[in-house]
Amino acid sequence: MNTAEHIYEEEIKRRVDEHPYPMLAAALGLGYVLGGGLFTPATLRMGALAIRIAQIPLLRARLFGAVEQTMHHLAAERSNGSAAEDD
Image (cartoon, rainbow, N blue to C red):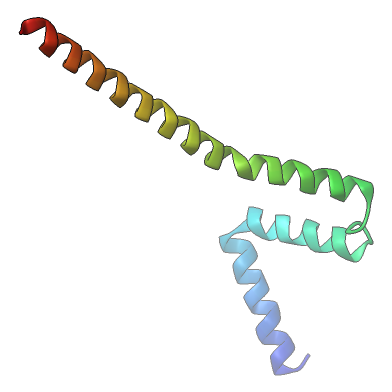
């Protein structure tokens, strides 16, 4: 084994020891792609699901922003209404 191969082998062993689950996920993903699974209907479904899941934080932020804006608007109306009643 030459020096470059030895260095890469040691580096991979170190990474597997330090971060076993991410390295397992990387190995599974690499095997899936190399095994020809990239352009299959299952991959398209997983991609569509991943896009939907990625949109959740954006939709949540928009929803909370709309609710917050509505609450501020209602509070302003309520305070203006009570001020008019005091006159």
